[in-house]
Length: 152
Image (cartoon, rainbow, N blue to C red; front, side):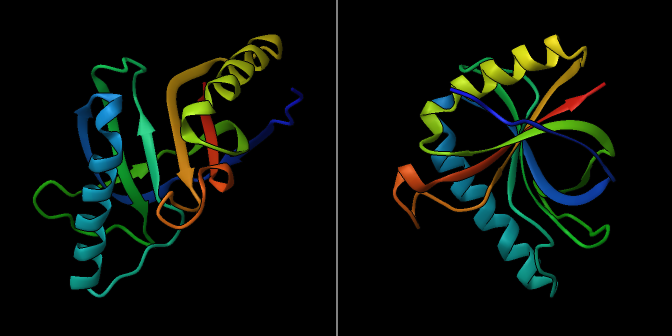
């Protein structure tokens, strides 16, 4: 399959997020609970999301993922409890808009990893996924996920 990867420079983006560890099999329930908690907090403080919900993966250990689940916001906001004020750092990045089931995205990851090496980029190891829709809204074949590798 042929992929068209986009390289860009992005500014820092404030977020509210929950960082935790999880097995890959537990992610659907974890994401659902985290987003519900964050959106309830935003509603309570009279704020709205300023972008697409995301998951940031700080490792790829499928039995012990270090993950941040969050929502971009328009300005630095206070967190509460497990919700922390954080940011997606300003970065040079490569991305791809993937359409299809989450479980079938491994080929995109492999192609991006190969492409970055062939084009003399060095990924930081942090990967973001931005979720444009949800399996609760559309069939798996219609899921849209922007996969982003941060670059050094």
